[in-house]
Length: 95
Image 1 (cartoon, one colour):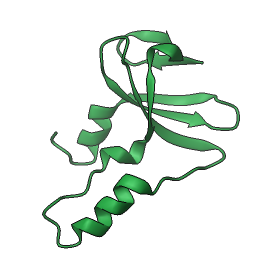
Image 2 (image 1 turned 180 degrees about the horizontal axis):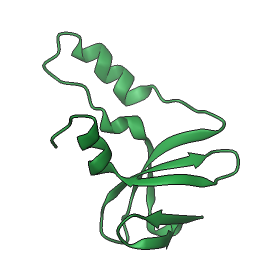
Image 3 (image 1 turned 180 degrees about the vertical axis):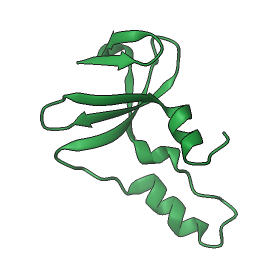
């Protein structure tokens, strides 16, 4: 599978490590009164869809960037690749 890195161009998926659901970017606020329940969901609950799914990939053997890859889990066709930092910033996260 080839992942078209936004900065470095096409790369073989062997250079990357799959990190799980892209919802990991949306870490709950630890100061929230309901933080425990939210952290349990954050840490353990994952979707397992058949079809389009947003995933977090780490470019371990490259520039060490995190990517959000939108991939069809039934065909492995990749429809979008974004830098995770840009996705996080677009959702209001500063770090």
